[in-house]
Amino acid sequence: MAGSFLNRIIIINIKSKSMPIVKANEPLGPRPVIITIYGDPGIGKTSLINTAKKPLIIDGDRGVSRAILRKDALIIDRWEEVQDLEKQGAFKPFSTIGIDTPKAILDDYMMSYVMRQDAKLRGNKLWAYGAIGDEYRLFMNNRRQDLADLINICHAKKDDDTKRMVPDVTGQTYQLILRTSDMIGYYTIHNGKRMLYFDPTESTVGKNVACLPPIEVPDKTDPTFRTFLADIIERVRTAIASQSEEQLEAMQKSENYQNEIRDCETPDQLTKLLVEVNALPDWLKIPLRKLITDKAKEKGYVPNKQTLCFEIPAGQPAANEASGVPAAATDQGAKPASPAPVKPATPPVDPKEDPTGIVTSSNDRYAAFGGLGMALEMDRVTGFGIFFEYEDINEWTEEQYMAELAKAHDAKTESEKKPKRKKATAAAAH
Picture 1 (cartoon, one colour):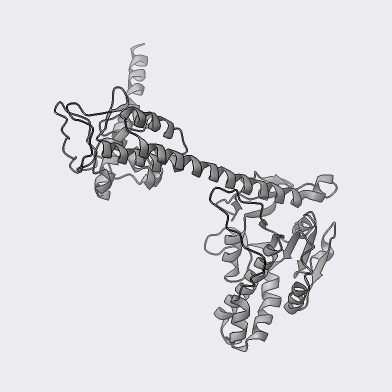
Picture 2 (cartoon, rainbow, N blue to C red):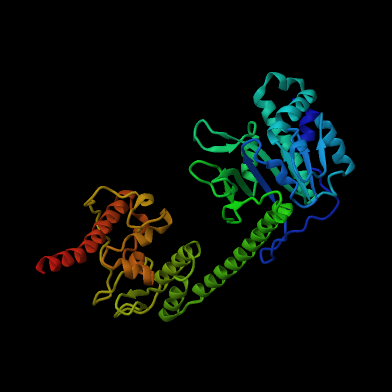
């Protein structure tokens, strides 16, 4: 490829304004939203752009003439026209830039443009697709610097491999659009109503960071249709900002708990923290419980299964133990031997497919062992469970882990059968 073309693609135009660093304890401000909407031809995709705030449609599909509520549009013949308008700042007055469709822009305008810039691309399709992907990325980044929201309007097609409906986008740019879009919605007619679905399904690609439910698109005569997409964009922007604030608050809470765990000096303090930590969401709870485990190991505390509290082992002062967390105390305060591998009573249970719900992911390893001498229900309520049952659980092989999981699975299944048997016996007696 010609050096000048590569340089034009990869050089970032650094503006004179400062680029402030956002501190970890500072909330993130509003940012442009990128939404991709795909659906069948003629359903009214282009018209949706006209319901956004101060929109400009870059019309590569010549669909503006068929749209309702017509707004400003750029009907191009060559990609150089878009670049000239960029230099003039013609896009800056618009709040929303709609691209209709990315495939038409890529295939009909960008492809011929990059080949005019570098004739070598005519003989190398792979390089050509990479070049138009870079050009599209550059255009998107420039619009985001202008703080404009971006709407990609795409036709739908069925993927040959997954058999799902996906946006019809050329080459590597498809992955770029999937990655950069905040929302990806499938626009279709269901039961006579125009519906917009953002959640991914087995038959459609989707992306729904704002957790929006299926949305019925109002009729063109409905007054709410005039601001339909503008309202969705604001809902998405608010949801993203809210999630950022919640994540910041959660990180601060986690940091506070970490400091408290490090400062614990008594079993009672550690017990109190464990109760509080168990009320947190899993993604916060699991790492904090691991810290509590390490702290108990450091201080030499053991859990009392009757009182559900941490204690100092009988006949043993609280002290750091190089050998790890002591298990449930014996009369002399000694540790029992680590368990030997157990052959599974049933075929190993895949954690991702465990019907009992004992395991939901590899991160829930500790919660999987309710059958190892402590009730599973107690584990769910107190968080102790196998956490302190065996000091070397993290060193177990996958075979040992799956064997114990199968054992716990059998124990739980058997316990669930017992009440049913009693009930059946009582019924037979009558």
